[in-house]
Image (cartoon, rainbow, N blue to C red; front, side, top):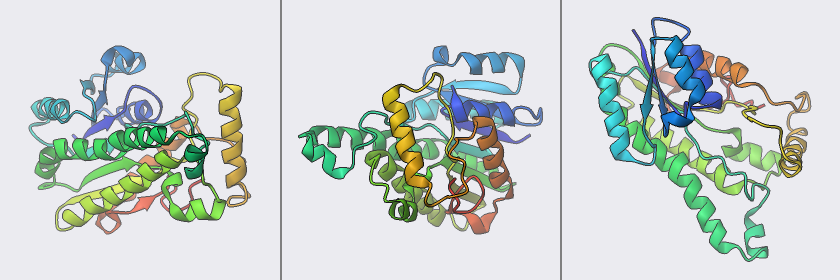
Length: 273
């Protein structure tokens, strides 16, 4: 019975991972959230499906992650086949800022704040989470191919950044580029083991729980306009979490040892949209 841990499972893509994976009764799926009280849909799903279990932990807290791993071990006998690092900090404030804008607005202190917040969750949080569950992953690797997936983003690709002249959303983009390197470092370290590490972009996904404000809509439109010259056939519309996760799970299923360390799109290549 394959076991999965999905972080950031309270909503959006994370919740959809849990929903689609638990549709098979042969899977045991652990949804990791910071606060069970704020994960109403996940709690409802766990009530409907006996193969869904909820873990409370913060990806920035190694102690809580180790406690969560211990709970998983009790259920699985000390193993874990799949870890999906989905939890992330998505910065909306100053999303339109480029590197120079911070100085122009005399907000150098916010530059440091934004970088620290993005890197704490999107990079260091992934390391803490992977390390906490690594003993379980290594135990499972003795019997089957184990996969560690980190949800990244196409805006972390330097090629796309240059081609689209996309200079905004700097701290988030930089954190995703950095976590792609972290994935490669893990792949390099465990190249001789039966564990593969992948960074996968889910595409442009609509995870909003409310209509965008005029200011948010303006930022979304600006991003779409920046991408259109690179993807002229793209309709400019985000995909749903259901569509995204279906694509990503297909990439995960097909991945083998030759792919370890790669940064791929939800199409399994470098087509980000």
